[in-house]
Image (cartoon, rainbow, N blue to C red; front, side):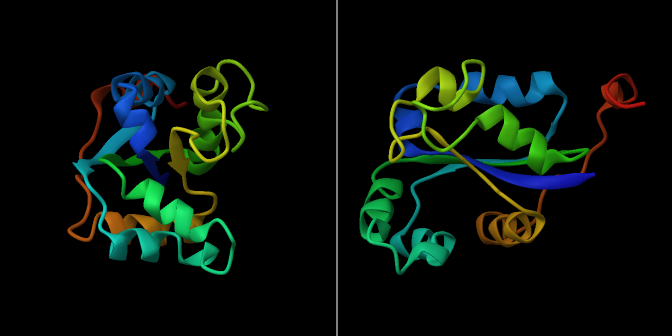
Length: 148
């Protein structure tokens, strides 16, 4: 089992896509173990996107991600990181396949609805950053019907 971090960005929240996005992950079989809505501080956003601090788009990214509420989530399942990234689709919504979140709802790289961790190390860092008090540990009774 892996746990991954997923965030609905301000554009996804403003467009009313949170429920649809949660539904896609649940329907796939991932288990929600962390969920909160918040307005990210500049400090939190800076720490989250520190890897991009030298990039020319960094300041614009911080301004965007702190422009409105986001929904931070933690999803658990077998290969959860790869599964979540497949549900999300490529960064550029114009290149994302229909059926993915970005393929269905995003038209831009900057306003692309959603973020998902890209590796185990990234997921661990992002989960500790956004969920410092930990996650909700629980067992879903349908798990036996999802995995062999």
